[in-house]
Image (tube, rainbow, N blue to C red; front, side, top):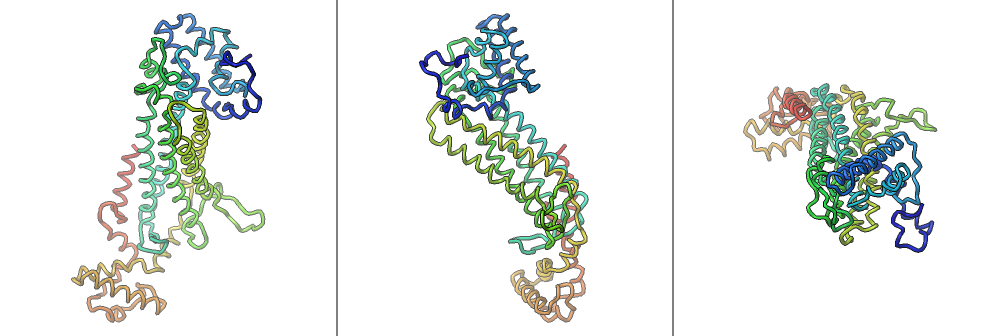
Length: 457
């Protein structure tokens, strides 16, 4: 069969051109969305008396037959038919004859592909929101079990102050909550309908764009036909949100990698999420979080690729825009895989609470609390800060930690020290003392868990 658009041409398409310009190798992912949009479109054509009701029913039957074959994997896509739209139209015509050619009345592949991508991305955005929520639930579950598990908190990757492990995990909960909110908000822009904008200028047929928008669950049609077929902002926004989300996944993965090392030894990942070495039998490698961290680059690349693609395109549709899909598909697949692994990996990790507790006893992360102790007794904080710096230096020289110093040693630096300093320096007390809203104090973390559960419900 000749090209469905071949009437104007006197020569067949060069085979190399066919192979180079064909998108069916990847846009077949849009097959079901393409049929969904076509079913709405043909129903509208009938309601508007553009084709007969008999033709509507015949085309609908043919589309559903093609859909069943696609779902069963019983189709052979052809490079000669270029893309998913032409492949499905060819299958339809093969199924029901020339009447199938009436399906394309009042539309173009330009508004058709844009509609397919809106439908696809809307569906995948909901899927990703559910997957993010599964990760959040795993974080809350672990946090709830470890509110009173204490580990060193870090700044500059240097021990800073002890914190609740539950509090540390919940920091990621709120990162993912913002990711989920961004996905939710993006649906307002994904949910515009390009269908009926045709190639770029609309159509002379008396179509009803609101009808197809309603049938497909869109909020409204695009007000401008040029914008409808050339807009890829909704994909850029998705890739931007995805880039932020994979950053959060990467940061969490980095901590899982560090914590599971022999140097930290704060957690152990389940064997299901690790691999071994082909030469070193003792190794247990955190390959999953390493790959999650590594996937960041490809999603950043997909965002930068589409930004670069679009920045010089005039209105309206240009063939360059065929390059908008692979990065979107790849990002969806990458995030779906990452989130699907992250939730069970977090849920099954073994937290070594005793090792964490030992770590906070062997550092100087309670030094700030001595400064606060002296400040409460009336010494200006800046003076207290200087005194504690000297105490820490002294303790390091003596190969001691702050809880190891005797009272007469403390008295060398200030007469304000009393026996109650030892209670103030206990790691549990240091953490519990943080009572401001959102702090790491145990009651505040319990409050935060309640708030997190409210967001999940």
